[in-house]
Image (cartoon, rainbow, N blue to C red; front, side, top):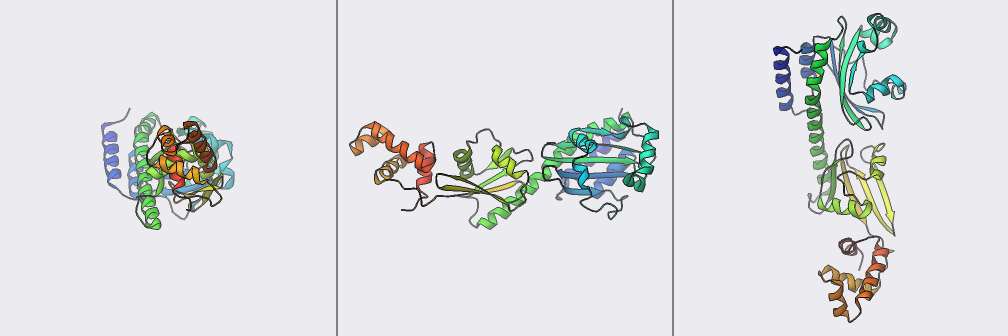
Length: 331
Protein backbone atom coordinates (compact mmCIF):
# COMPACT_ATOMS: atom_id res chain seq x y z
CA UNK A 1 0.00 0.00 0.00
CA UNK A 2 1.09 3.55 -0.65
CA UNK A 3 2.29 5.65 2.23
CA UNK A 4 0.94 9.10 3.01
CA UNK A 5 4.23 10.70 1.95
CA UNK A 6 4.02 8.87 -1.40
CA UNK A 7 0.62 10.38 -2.15
CA UNK A 8 1.81 13.83 -1.09
CA UNK A 9 4.83 13.51 -3.36
CA UNK A 10 2.65 12.47 -6.31
CA UNK A 11 0.24 15.38 -5.73
CA UNK A 12 3.16 17.82 -5.52
CA UNK A 13 4.65 16.41 -8.73
CA UNK A 14 1.34 16.68 -10.60
CA UNK A 15 0.80 20.28 -9.46
CA UNK A 16 4.27 21.36 -10.59
CA UNK A 17 4.02 19.44 -13.86
CA UNK A 18 0.74 21.19 -14.72
CA UNK A 19 2.41 24.55 -14.11
CA UNK A 20 5.21 23.70 -16.55
CA UNK A 21 4.85 24.86 -20.15
CA UNK A 22 7.64 22.96 -21.88
CA UNK A 23 7.18 21.00 -25.10
CA UNK A 24 6.94 17.64 -23.28
CA UNK A 25 4.81 16.40 -20.40
CA UNK A 26 7.78 16.26 -18.01
CA UNK A 27 11.33 17.59 -17.90
CA UNK A 28 14.54 16.33 -16.31
CA UNK A 29 13.93 18.05 -12.98
CA UNK A 30 10.50 16.44 -12.64
CA UNK A 31 11.96 13.04 -13.55
CA UNK A 32 14.58 13.43 -10.83
CA UNK A 33 11.81 14.00 -8.31
CA UNK A 34 9.97 10.90 -9.48
CA UNK A 35 13.12 8.79 -9.22
CA UNK A 36 13.43 9.90 -5.60
CA UNK A 37 9.80 9.03 -4.88
CA UNK A 38 10.15 5.58 -6.46
CA UNK A 39 13.56 5.12 -4.77
CA UNK A 40 15.52 4.05 -7.84
CA UNK A 41 18.49 5.24 -9.87
CA UNK A 42 16.96 5.94 -13.28
CA UNK A 43 13.74 7.50 -14.58
CA UNK A 44 13.07 7.97 -18.29
CA UNK A 45 10.22 9.54 -20.25
CA UNK A 46 9.80 8.98 -23.96
CA UNK A 47 7.25 9.39 -26.71
CA UNK A 48 7.13 7.07 -29.70
CA UNK A 49 5.48 7.17 -33.11
CA UNK A 50 5.20 3.45 -33.82
CA UNK A 51 3.95 3.55 -37.45
CA UNK A 52 6.95 5.75 -38.36
CA UNK A 53 9.27 3.73 -36.08
CA UNK A 54 10.47 6.94 -34.54
CA UNK A 55 11.30 8.06 -31.01
CA UNK A 56 9.86 11.57 -30.99
CA UNK A 57 11.12 12.55 -27.52
CA UNK A 58 13.56 11.02 -25.05
CA UNK A 59 14.11 12.63 -21.65
CA UNK A 60 16.43 11.00 -19.10
CA UNK A 61 16.89 11.92 -15.45
CA UNK A 62 20.08 13.66 -14.31
CA UNK A 63 21.67 10.40 -13.16
CA UNK A 64 21.90 9.21 -16.76
CA UNK A 65 24.67 10.52 -18.97
CA UNK A 66 22.82 12.15 -21.90
CA UNK A 67 25.60 11.00 -24.24
CA UNK A 68 25.29 7.38 -23.13
CA UNK A 69 22.11 6.80 -25.12
CA UNK A 70 22.16 8.99 -28.24
CA UNK A 71 18.78 9.96 -29.69
CA UNK A 72 17.18 8.09 -31.31
CA UNK A 73 18.60 5.15 -29.41
CA UNK A 74 16.46 2.24 -30.65
CA UNK A 75 18.17 -0.10 -33.12
CA UNK A 76 16.07 -1.21 -36.08
CA UNK A 77 15.57 -4.65 -34.54
CA UNK A 78 13.62 -3.18 -31.62
CA UNK A 79 10.63 -2.32 -33.79
CA UNK A 80 10.06 -5.94 -34.74
CA UNK A 81 11.46 -7.92 -31.78
CA UNK A 82 8.72 -9.89 -29.97
CA UNK A 83 9.78 -8.55 -26.55
CA UNK A 84 9.42 -4.89 -27.51
CA UNK A 85 6.25 -5.42 -29.52
CA UNK A 86 4.78 -7.05 -26.40
CA UNK A 87 5.91 -4.09 -24.28
CA UNK A 88 4.23 -1.73 -26.73
CA UNK A 89 0.97 -3.69 -26.37
CA UNK A 90 1.18 -3.83 -22.56
CA UNK A 91 0.00 -0.88 -20.48
CA UNK A 92 2.08 -1.95 -17.46
CA UNK A 93 5.52 -3.58 -17.40
CA UNK A 94 7.68 -4.99 -14.58
CA UNK A 95 10.78 -7.00 -15.42
CA UNK A 96 10.69 -8.98 -12.16
CA UNK A 97 7.24 -10.29 -13.13
CA UNK A 98 8.88 -11.97 -16.14
CA UNK A 99 12.32 -13.11 -14.90
CA UNK A 100 13.60 -14.17 -11.50
CA UNK A 101 16.54 -12.36 -9.91
CA UNK A 102 19.16 -14.82 -11.19
CA UNK A 103 17.99 -14.46 -14.79
CA UNK A 104 17.90 -10.68 -14.46
CA UNK A 105 21.45 -10.62 -13.14
CA UNK A 106 22.50 -12.72 -16.09
CA UNK A 107 20.80 -10.26 -18.44
CA UNK A 108 22.49 -7.42 -16.59
CA UNK A 109 25.94 -8.91 -17.10
CA UNK A 110 25.46 -10.13 -20.68
CA UNK A 111 23.27 -7.48 -22.27
CA UNK A 112 25.12 -4.39 -23.45
CA UNK A 113 22.57 -1.81 -22.31
CA UNK A 114 21.90 -3.41 -18.92
CA UNK A 115 25.59 -4.08 -18.28
CA UNK A 116 26.44 -0.42 -18.84
CA UNK A 117 23.79 0.80 -16.41
CA UNK A 118 23.89 -2.23 -14.05
CA UNK A 119 20.11 -2.63 -14.10
CA UNK A 120 18.53 -5.49 -12.14
CA UNK A 121 14.87 -4.51 -12.37
CA UNK A 122 12.66 -2.23 -14.45
CA UNK A 123 9.09 -1.02 -14.05
CA UNK A 124 6.98 1.31 -16.15
CA UNK A 125 3.80 1.98 -18.07
CA UNK A 126 2.56 3.52 -21.28
CA UNK A 127 -0.31 5.84 -22.19
CA UNK A 128 -1.86 6.56 -25.56
CA UNK A 129 -2.92 4.48 -28.54
CA UNK A 130 -0.54 1.55 -29.01
CA UNK A 131 -1.39 1.47 -32.73
CA UNK A 132 -0.18 5.02 -33.32
CA UNK A 133 1.54 7.16 -30.68
CA UNK A 134 2.39 6.38 -27.10
CA UNK A 135 4.20 7.96 -24.17
CA UNK A 136 6.06 5.84 -21.63
CA UNK A 137 7.51 6.36 -18.19
CA UNK A 138 10.19 3.87 -17.10
CA UNK A 139 12.10 3.37 -13.87
CA UNK A 140 15.22 1.23 -13.46
CA UNK A 141 16.93 -0.02 -10.32
CA UNK A 142 20.54 -1.08 -9.82
CA UNK A 143 19.99 -2.76 -6.46
CA UNK A 144 16.46 -3.59 -5.35
CA UNK A 145 13.52 -5.40 -6.91
CA UNK A 146 10.36 -3.39 -7.44
CA UNK A 147 7.47 -4.52 -5.23
CA UNK A 148 3.72 -4.08 -4.76
CA UNK A 149 4.18 -0.59 -3.39
CA UNK A 150 5.87 0.38 -6.66
CA UNK A 151 3.06 -1.21 -8.64
CA UNK A 152 0.51 0.87 -6.72
CA UNK A 153 2.60 3.95 -7.35
CA UNK A 154 2.60 3.27 -11.11
CA UNK A 155 -1.19 2.82 -11.10
CA UNK A 156 -1.52 6.17 -9.32
CA UNK A 157 0.86 7.96 -11.70
CA UNK A 158 -0.47 6.53 -14.97
CA UNK A 159 -3.66 8.63 -15.37
CA UNK A 160 -1.74 11.74 -14.31
CA UNK A 161 0.98 11.17 -16.89
CA UNK A 162 -1.71 10.49 -19.50
CA UNK A 163 -3.34 13.84 -18.77
CA UNK A 164 0.03 15.64 -18.89
CA UNK A 165 0.88 13.96 -22.21
CA UNK A 166 -2.44 14.99 -23.77
CA UNK A 167 -1.87 18.53 -22.47
CA UNK A 168 1.57 18.64 -24.12
CA UNK A 169 -0.07 17.57 -27.40
CA UNK A 170 -2.56 20.42 -27.05
CA UNK A 171 0.33 22.86 -26.65
CA UNK A 172 1.92 21.45 -29.79
CA UNK A 173 -1.37 21.75 -31.65
CA UNK A 174 -1.63 25.43 -30.72
CA UNK A 175 1.92 26.05 -31.94
CA UNK A 176 1.23 24.20 -35.20
CA UNK A 177 -2.03 26.08 -35.69
CA UNK A 178 -0.28 29.42 -35.21
CA UNK A 179 2.35 28.42 -37.77
CA UNK A 180 -0.32 27.26 -40.23
CA UNK A 181 -2.28 30.49 -39.89
CA UNK A 182 0.86 32.54 -40.35
CA UNK A 183 1.73 30.66 -43.53
CA UNK A 184 -1.84 31.09 -44.85
CA UNK A 185 -1.65 34.82 -44.15
CA UNK A 186 -5.29 35.74 -43.56
CA UNK A 187 -6.10 34.27 -40.16
CA UNK A 188 -8.45 31.37 -39.51
CA UNK A 189 -11.47 32.78 -41.34
CA UNK A 190 -11.99 30.92 -44.60
CA UNK A 191 -9.18 28.43 -43.92
CA UNK A 192 -9.73 24.66 -43.84
CA UNK A 193 -7.63 23.56 -40.85
CA UNK A 194 -7.95 20.39 -38.74
CA UNK A 195 -6.37 19.65 -35.35
CA UNK A 196 -6.35 15.94 -34.50
CA UNK A 197 -5.20 13.70 -31.67
CA UNK A 198 -2.75 10.76 -31.70
CA UNK A 199 -5.45 8.20 -32.55
CA UNK A 200 -6.96 10.25 -35.39
CA UNK A 201 -9.67 11.89 -33.29
CA UNK A 202 -10.62 15.32 -34.65
CA UNK A 203 -10.13 17.78 -31.78
CA UNK A 204 -11.07 20.85 -33.78
CA UNK A 205 -11.85 21.69 -37.38
CA UNK A 206 -12.85 24.96 -38.98
CA UNK A 207 -16.25 24.98 -40.73
CA UNK A 208 -14.47 24.97 -44.09
CA UNK A 209 -12.50 21.87 -43.11
CA UNK A 210 -15.60 20.05 -41.89
CA UNK A 211 -17.34 20.82 -45.17
CA UNK A 212 -14.45 19.46 -47.23
CA UNK A 213 -14.08 16.33 -45.09
CA UNK A 214 -17.78 15.66 -45.45
CA UNK A 215 -17.80 16.28 -49.20
CA UNK A 216 -14.73 14.19 -49.98
CA UNK A 217 -14.81 11.46 -47.34
CA UNK A 218 -18.25 11.54 -45.72
CA UNK A 219 -16.64 12.20 -42.34
CA UNK A 220 -19.26 12.32 -39.58
CA UNK A 221 -17.95 10.35 -36.58
CA UNK A 222 -15.40 12.81 -35.24
CA UNK A 223 -12.50 10.76 -36.62
CA UNK A 224 -10.21 11.38 -39.56
CA UNK A 225 -11.16 9.19 -42.54
CA UNK A 226 -9.25 5.92 -42.88
CA UNK A 227 -7.53 7.15 -46.07
CA UNK A 228 -5.94 10.04 -44.18
CA UNK A 229 -5.06 7.90 -41.14
CA UNK A 230 -3.19 5.44 -43.37
CA UNK A 231 -1.34 8.27 -45.10
CA UNK A 232 -0.49 10.04 -41.85
CA UNK A 233 1.02 6.84 -40.42
CA UNK A 234 4.13 7.49 -42.51
CA UNK A 235 3.78 11.16 -43.43
CA UNK A 236 6.29 13.65 -42.06
CA UNK A 237 5.34 17.30 -41.44
CA UNK A 238 5.20 19.10 -44.77
CA UNK A 239 4.02 16.04 -46.71
CA UNK A 240 1.00 16.35 -48.99
CA UNK A 241 -1.74 13.94 -50.01
CA UNK A 242 -4.01 14.53 -53.00
CA UNK A 243 -7.45 13.11 -53.73
CA UNK A 244 -8.92 13.52 -57.23
CA UNK A 245 -12.51 13.20 -58.32
CA UNK A 246 -14.32 14.25 -61.47
CA UNK A 247 -11.55 16.62 -62.45
CA UNK A 248 -11.36 18.30 -59.03
CA UNK A 249 -8.54 17.87 -56.51
CA UNK A 250 -8.27 18.07 -52.72
CA UNK A 251 -4.79 18.57 -51.29
CA UNK A 252 -4.20 17.69 -47.64
CA UNK A 253 -0.97 19.02 -46.12
CA UNK A 254 0.50 17.78 -42.83
CA UNK A 255 1.29 21.20 -41.38
CA UNK A 256 2.65 19.50 -38.25
CA UNK A 257 2.34 16.28 -36.31
CA UNK A 258 -1.25 17.11 -35.33
CA UNK A 259 -2.40 19.71 -37.86
CA UNK A 260 -3.80 19.41 -41.38
CA UNK A 261 -4.48 22.14 -43.92
CA UNK A 262 -6.97 21.27 -46.67
CA UNK A 263 -7.16 23.02 -50.03
CA UNK A 264 -9.64 22.25 -52.78
CA UNK A 265 -8.90 23.11 -56.36
CA UNK A 266 -11.80 23.17 -58.79
CA UNK A 267 -10.76 21.94 -62.19
CA UNK A 268 -11.29 23.94 -65.37
CA UNK A 269 -12.42 20.64 -66.91
CA UNK A 270 -15.81 20.87 -65.17
CA UNK A 271 -18.23 22.10 -67.83
CA UNK A 272 -21.70 23.02 -66.64
CA UNK A 273 -24.33 23.94 -69.20
CA UNK A 274 -25.84 27.44 -68.99
CA UNK A 275 -29.10 25.91 -67.73
CA UNK A 276 -27.28 23.91 -65.01
CA UNK A 277 -25.51 27.06 -63.86
CA UNK A 278 -28.83 28.92 -63.86
CA UNK A 279 -30.47 26.23 -61.73
CA UNK A 280 -27.55 26.20 -59.27
CA UNK A 281 -27.68 29.97 -59.06
CA UNK A 282 -31.31 29.77 -57.96
CA UNK A 283 -30.41 27.01 -55.50
CA UNK A 284 -27.82 29.39 -54.05
CA UNK A 285 -30.63 31.93 -53.54
CA UNK A 286 -32.45 29.39 -51.39
CA UNK A 287 -35.19 28.36 -53.82
CA UNK A 288 -36.71 24.89 -53.73
CA UNK A 289 -37.01 22.69 -56.83
CA UNK A 290 -40.68 23.62 -57.17
CA UNK A 291 -39.90 27.34 -56.91
CA UNK A 292 -37.09 26.99 -59.47
CA UNK A 293 -39.45 25.14 -61.83
CA UNK A 294 -41.99 27.96 -61.62
CA UNK A 295 -39.28 30.57 -62.19
CA UNK A 296 -37.94 28.80 -65.30
CA UNK A 297 -41.30 27.60 -66.60
CA UNK A 298 -40.24 23.95 -66.55
CA UNK A 299 -41.37 20.82 -64.72
CA UNK A 300 -39.88 20.05 -61.26
CA UNK A 301 -38.60 16.77 -62.71
CA UNK A 302 -36.57 18.77 -65.23
CA UNK A 303 -35.01 20.81 -62.42
CA UNK A 304 -34.18 17.58 -60.57
CA UNK A 305 -32.54 16.21 -63.74
CA UNK A 306 -30.41 19.34 -64.18
CA UNK A 307 -29.30 19.06 -60.55
CA UNK A 308 -28.50 15.36 -60.91
CA UNK A 309 -26.30 16.06 -63.93
CA UNK A 310 -24.58 18.99 -62.17
CA UNK A 311 -23.91 16.86 -59.06
CA UNK A 312 -22.26 14.21 -61.22
CA UNK A 313 -20.02 16.74 -62.96
CA UNK A 314 -19.06 18.44 -59.71
CA UNK A 315 -18.55 15.19 -57.77
CA UNK A 316 -20.95 16.16 -54.96
CA UNK A 317 -24.11 14.74 -53.43
CA UNK A 318 -25.93 17.71 -51.90
CA UNK A 319 -27.25 21.16 -52.78
CA UNK A 320 -24.92 22.87 -50.29
CA UNK A 321 -21.84 21.11 -51.64
CA UNK A 322 -22.84 21.87 -55.23
CA UNK A 323 -23.25 25.58 -54.50
CA UNK A 324 -19.92 25.69 -52.65
CA UNK A 325 -18.05 24.00 -55.46
CA UNK A 326 -19.75 26.02 -58.22
CA UNK A 327 -18.61 29.23 -56.53
CA UNK A 328 -14.99 28.14 -57.06
CA UNK A 329 -15.40 27.43 -60.78
CA UNK A 330 -14.18 29.97 -63.34
CA UNK A 331 -16.86 32.07 -64.94
